Image (cartoon, rainbow, N blue to C red; front, top):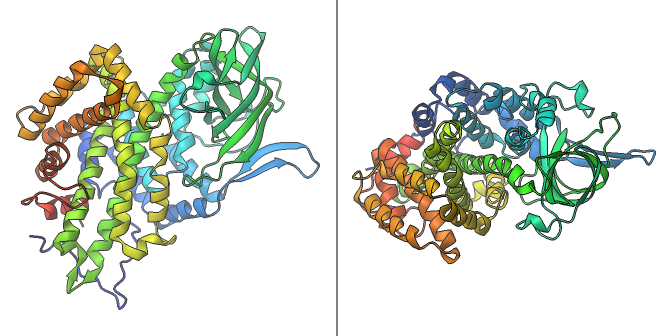
Amino acid sequence: MAAGIGREMRGDGNQAPALVDYNLYSRDAALREGLRREGAGWAEDRLEAFGARLGGEEAIRWGFEANTSPPVLRAWDRFGERRDEVEFHPAWHELMRLSVEQGLSGGPWREPREGAHVARAAALYLAGQNEAGHTCPLSMTYAAIPALRQDAAADGEWEPRLKSAEYDARFRPAEGKRGALCGMGMTERQGGSDVRANRSRAELIDGGEYEIWGHKWFCSAPMCDVFLVLAQTAGGLTCFLMPRWRPDGTRNAIRLARIKDKLGNRSNASAEVEFDGAWARRIGGEGRGVATIIEMVNHTRLDCVVGSASLMRQAAAQAAHHARHRWAFGRPLVEQPAMTAVLADLFIEAEAALALGLRVARAFDARERSAGERGLARLGVAAAKYWVTKRAPAMVGEAMECLGGNGYVEECVMPRLYREAPVNSIWEGSGSVVALDVVRAVKRDPGAVEAVMAEAALAQGGDRRLDAFLAGLKERLGRVSEEEARRLAEDLALALAGSLLVRHGDTAVADAFCATRLGREGGWTWGTLPKGTDAAAIVRRGWAD
């Protein structure tokens, strides 16, 4: 069955060559098809060029260098004065420049058009395969703009810089920069799930201006030019825009206490910060902090989905590349049925995750003109965030195993992917938080539920297992409870993914997905596909020469 999918390229040591000098876009059939399907075919040329650049030796080297030389905190200068700066390796800045120019930080806002959020999601999916850590500040900058638009003065001052295609790493007041980046600070020591328990306090100075005292346990990308933060006022938890520099051009009182020593995401700096009367401008009304910042959260949740899909894709590609070149028992690993089944299962998971991410991105594009798309964006992004980010760590771990010991050493990209894989399930709401958000949306927004179920029902009649799954899900929606929150989030994501693959995907991929993820016809570990699955065809689709 698997004959012909391997390629004899054996050196004396039977080692696979490094995966380098390839095009991340043109080698990905599912991405090409999804981009056209979801309304962003106009971006193909730029994404093909971006994919070639990211797959080149230079950009791959930048990714390794940015991780082996992580950022360094310079809290004080040699004269004992506060400095509060973070130094990055030059490779980090090269990656940032490349991605900002590609539109990851502000493309859809700078060039609004049909499919703009889909095109950006595709670019993020490519960039994350090269080096995921640098996408964090890009994601937050992209997501900050909808929140800023709730305040005309702040938006007029900052949006042109945040959506700029110019990367400017200089530590200086924003007035001297055309391009800027935005970070975020919500989590405090007492916990991140319930931000209403935050203790940072803001005191009114004049008009919408405040000074803030307190701390943040995680401040993402502390070298950004401006931050969205939450703090308590007399009216309750409120959202603020806090620049690194005060309006008079002096440094704002943002003190960097330390950089977190994280499991993954090591190229990116996450810091503990203290505010010592830091100047800030209120965004939205007092006591409306969560409602104001929720738009930022929804956009970063979309990036969690796409970012996890990105890691899955790169892990599957590395595994397939290795298996095509590594021989055992007289033939390439990829032609041995047990390995073929594992690789096929990995590509099934990666393709389903990508399909979900791109479809939700299209809902973000269309939500202003369609109530149904707005509902799909609201509920679909939460369900997809829950499911895809949960699947990534196990899937990347299985892909690493395909490389054996070669995948376990730091010269290989697989350890970096493995360390990175859990972050998106933790960031922007861990599993239970997101699942409970799904329950709240189901209870409070019937239109969102109808939109998701209507989208899934478009594939009705296309696969008996999907039909049965949708019938069971519809029945459970009538008795939603917090105890079933995780199951509900999972099933909504599976219903959407299954529908997308049945309608638009490769026949072998869709059949195997419905059999194993919906019909439970396979086993519980990767590679336990039902008899009759055309695993070789799935692998060829996932990683064609």
